[in-house]
Image 1 (spheres, rainbow, N blue to C red):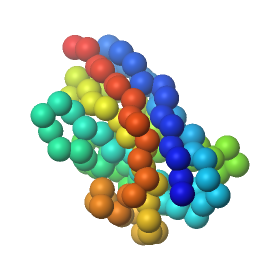
Image 2: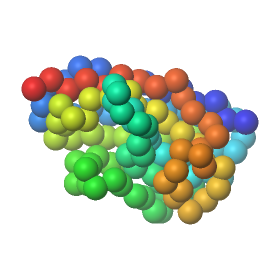
Image 3: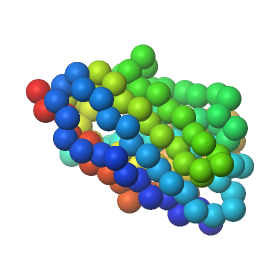
Image 4: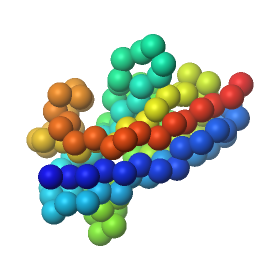
Length: 124
């Protein structure tokens, strides 16, 4: 079992930066790939970024490449998403998720563990 708690969301102007954090509890954090998803009002949940269990590999959706950076600190059982150059279309609830398998899965079905989400709002 993995319990995930996100923090760090908020309101920021377009072009600004935010870092969202996720702290995990449980014994298997360092054996799991992790990801950040987001869900905007009226839209489906989408994967934003993923990171391998040791942090050596990352993946980003095209719309955030060059602006967002995912990282993790296994000693702190934490995963982070640094968001720079934020745009109004980045406004969403951001969720941290832990995968059931390795290989940087992209589908929500491969992530059985989820945090409660943190709201990120970007004003124009």
